[in-house]
Amino acid sequence: MATKADSAGRRTKATKRASGPAGGKTPPGRGKGGSGGGKTRATDTRTGPARGKADVDQGRTGLAGRIRVPAVPERYQHWITLVVRVLLAGILGTAGYAKFTEPAALQKTAVSAYRILPQGAVTPVALGLPVLEMVLAVMILLGFATRVMAICVGLLFVVFIAGIISVAARGLSIDCGCFGGGGTVAKGQTHYLREVFRDLGFLVLAAWLMLYPRGKFALDRVLGMYA
Image (cartoon, rainbow, N blue to C red; front, side, top):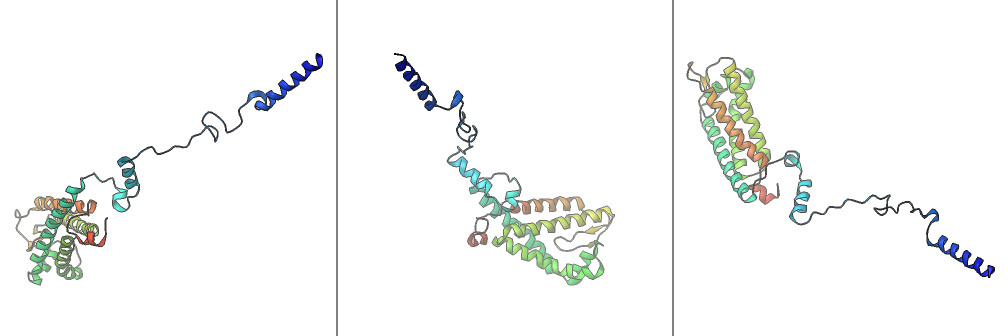
């Protein structure tokens, strides 16, 4: 009888050893959260439009990728950009053509009246500025490299605004000559504040094209730019 009882005890102990690790401890890496010490891998549970929007945001590059651009419905934005292009091209084209058709002497007088440039730079600027304005007008109207052209136009308006402010600060009395004319005028005939705000409005148009260059009937669409 004693022999049978001892055999049964040994079998019971062997069964307990085989059923789990000594001391009932859980093996490393088998914790409550699963493998890897209980850590779980985060997964993206977004589906449909939400996940697609996240992918688009992560894929943005260039100016739109560095600046948080306000969302504008695409069906409106493309038409607004077209209207802005036409307006800005009309402004630049009118200003450039008005100066281009004037006598060269008057163009030089308008530039030299600012008393900013050295005398040797007056003639190239006076004769080249109207051509630059007309070229930019054509490029923007056609929608070619719209963002790059808009940046160039924006810088041009910043220069114009700075020039007018400089003249006003020094107490000079001139006609800005932005749409032809120019030169010294009598005191009380200046319109510096109006001209600054006018150019700021033009600068806003250029800023729109910098942020939203995609538009209808643009060469950029044909060339696959800003797609």
